Amino acid sequence: MGKSVVETLIESLKSEAFLSYQKTIKPNGTNPQGGNPSDLYSGHALVALGEVVVPRLVRILNAPNWWVRAAAADIIGNIVPVVHQKEAVSELTNRLQDSEWWVRRNAAEALGNIGLTTQNVLGQLKFLLDDGNELVRRNALITLSKLVHTKDEMIPMLVKKITNDDGRYVRFYATGALRLINSN
Image (cartoon, rainbow, N blue to C red; front, top):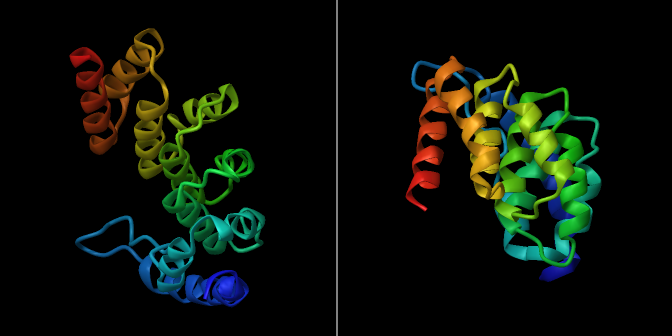
């Protein structure tokens, strides 16, 4: 159905994101952070449509509701646009400073999937290494590992995370990234 269903799916995304946010983000015994409110049926459909939805998703990265912004960032990162890459990267970079941690987490992951490196992106991601949320720090670290290719820049950041971060998964991913650097 292509482009003709984009607006319908965007509206579905907004409704579904709200319902998902209410249900999935509650912490539980097996997932103390709560579930990802961005895993949505409408999101999967938008990803299947591909690049044609990216301009519309970029616009809703500024939606008033954080759960819609988080879903838009997640979907853009799963499409990995080519034509609209610079516009998407610019808006996702702005979302790295979002007040809601789920949005920062998803924006960092999306930037790693897209893979377009700019000094602004790297600077904002490095800032997130000290974020108050472990999942944000972890995703920023994973993305930096994908985007930064100089040992001189990465090794000090990774060592700092291994030795000083309270998050065990942050330390784990920092160790893995350090191993990758040392094996190349």
